[in-house]
Image (cartoon, rainbow, N blue to C red; front, side):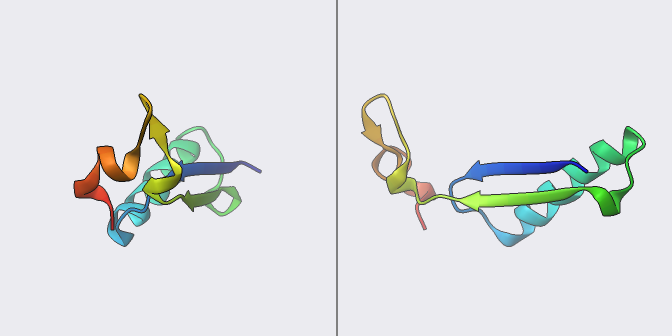
Length: 65
């Protein structure tokens, strides 16, 4: 059934768990069984993101792990 792909920079494990739970619950609210929902989180280093002509590893240094 539904497969949800999320692209993000690295995030804490607790946040990943919360994201998976809340997205799954959104589908459950639509009548889709939780067991049928797959969430895939792709963590991409900040150095591989950019906006405004600047790498996010520089722009968002406080978030770079």
